[in-house]
Image (cartoon, rainbow over all chains, first blue to last red; front, side):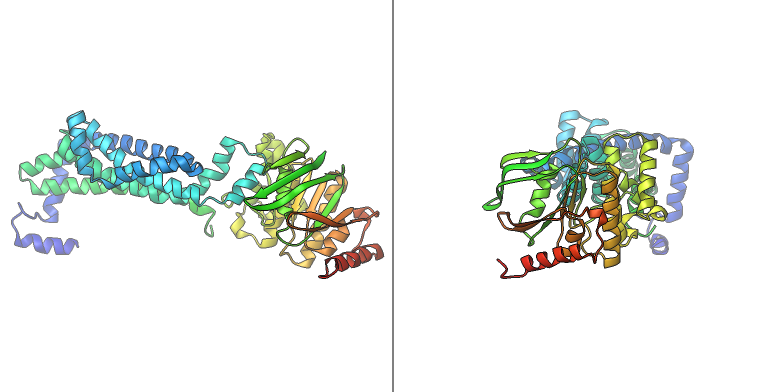
Length: 235
Length: 238
């Protein structure tokens, strides 16, 4: 892919398609100027807040909804709307309500990421082995022990896919939100580079966003998956 | 006191128990034999407090029972050691004491080497031994056994029946033992009920005097009990 990119870049002016080397150079100069660290820090805390809200509330609503059908019937359509409406529509509303700043990208990323976790939690609760829960009840396990010994471990495999989807959505929608509704952060820097026709810099920020996604997978989801795998596969 | 008093229980239109009264004596081993679906498991779940009767009263000693289910029902994400100690954890037994009790039963059930393994790494027989250890470890006021030795080979079956009897002799307590195995019932039961259902009815009751611990598989009395049970369970014996 890198080779194809290099070859193609040779035929086009760098304003349309800069070569990989130019992108690396742009990235280096962003790092050297301190711009990279500054914008990255802003984006990371925004995304973390959005992901914590989306993931936390997704689980916190999904567990009770999995136990009480009426609650699931109430929440499911809400989540479907949150997930189904194009993120850009939410962003338009958020811009009107919150103006530009941190709030719009955070709220939109949170709202778009939450349904993935909610649905995964709900499915996990549905798939829960009733016999196992009965056994635990027979042996006198109470709420907190029940959660720790039975519910959370049983939910982990389902949560993994939900959280992974949610993390990707948070990065995508969060950065998009910054692009359109903020004057700071990776997305906003990308927008600025675009207006200046600094295509190499735009691509450098794309690389940064990709890095964020990989970081989320590596730091958050891999360790969780490894823990879950211990009892499932030969280990 | 372990008893049902005029208990009825229905699932939808299907009446499983109808005005059933039953008392299990202090330190009595009661064996229940009967066709699948006659309501035995419902009976055990009522005695365990897992389900509530539609009407009537369930009397049970305080504290959770030692319940051994048809399937091992181990937590797949916990080790053998943690699974055996699950009930003790729920009872908030201090860690040190929990460890020593668990170690004792791992030893008795020949599971010491498997302490750190997960259920998927065990054979079927080992899993059922873990389930037995989990039930014994809480030193329960009563034991509920739902065909616990089904699908185990005969040698292991006899070994575990012996273990159950040893445990019971050490601390006699009410035991309700559901089984399809005539030999198991004849070896362990002080009272053996042959059931029909549903709704669950007691077709016949056999009392055996010789203490369970003093019986051997080929004792004349055991064989005679088996013969009576065979006769009762043969189709058309009604």
